[in-house]
Image: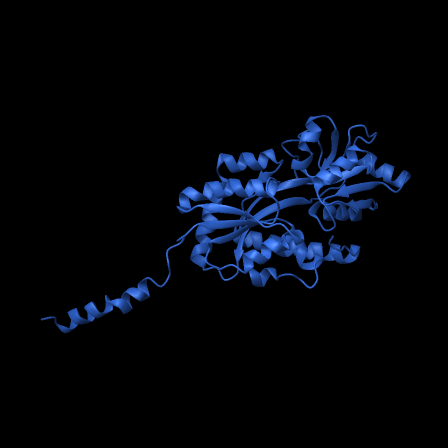
Length: 322
């Protein structure tokens, strides 16, 4: 016969006790998806696929990249924040995440309320480039030309794009005004620079790389703090007479708000392992960028700072989305 203590132990080991122990399901319990707010083949997509590939072995589940372009990445963010906050839905975000809360009105989301920052990933420089046939050889000459013979025009991937906002910031630092010509993508802007329809183009380094290699484009300056590995001979904006200036494309992994802390901690650690891999580092390097690891707190601070910086700029310049 069971004594009292044995009976109590048997009861606790029964359905009620087991339910208390197994209330939190194991993570991950099914395939993950990493949402990208851009079409396949671009820099963000390629980096997301590299990270996803590195995450799969240690997580023990497939990580599928899902392209959800539209509305300046707002379609992708909406798909993320409407998904379950269980760690199985992630997004590789870029600067638009911080800019769009002001660029689009009413604000499509609230960063502090709707998003859990997981990990910074890396950054790629915004570059200013001209056709190789242009008489302009450096950033100072470009500024001089804009002052002597206005208007000087530049193309970008669109109103409110990171390159557009980078040049708007630079105009304020340099005390100069260029004429902005928005396009539906960086490739169209590059085509018009090569055709002589605009005098310069502002895009990320990856997009101009093949045209620089073929001798069709010349990069005047990169906007990261250090020179880009793929353009080691090109000075930074800071080196060109504007100390402290920086405007780069950054990437980071985010999840919906309300993510349980143990899962957030696990995902952060797994992303850090992925960033240490040669494949991810080489992928970022081939895009002209570098790995930029950081804690969730540092990523949160970056989002706060970037949101405030973009908010001031967008309001002062009265920038509207395409």
